[in-house]
Length: 184
Image (cartoon, rainbow, N blue to C red; front, side, top):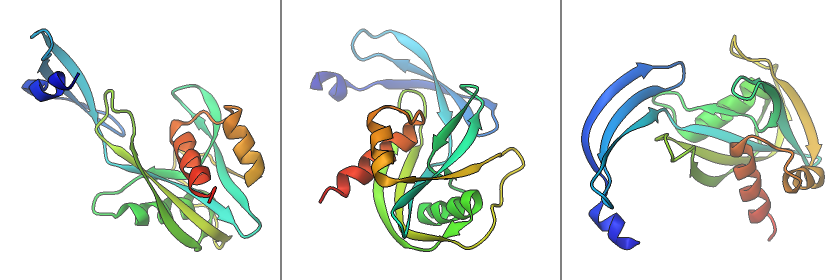
């Protein structure tokens, strides 16, 4: 299997595709190192994103319930969003937490990053935890957002994770990192 990596996929041609609301499409004509055939791949270029596992002083994790257009359903997920140009990902995490929930402060720690979807996207999601956050303002939502803040005890959130109740992969990844790193 290492032979494939050594030969590598060869980019023969790149072409800009349409700009989308959150992404820029790109078409890459790639040569397969295994068989030499050329395929056109679609890549979605995007800024990195962040999400936060916000934990209150009483040990609850704050989630946000919002409508997701792709699945046509409301999801329960961690607060987060896109890193603005020129912004550090921790700053973006603090901003997104404040905007979506009104909570801020606390002790912050980086949980790690993971590719959003390496099949066809080029960006990463940075996961943060903020312990002992406090409500200190009102929500400041974007015009296309409708967000309900939901507080869940950590033990219940862990059960929901194991039961597959969280459908957003970024939330699942962050909670796995959070619970694994907090097992001591």
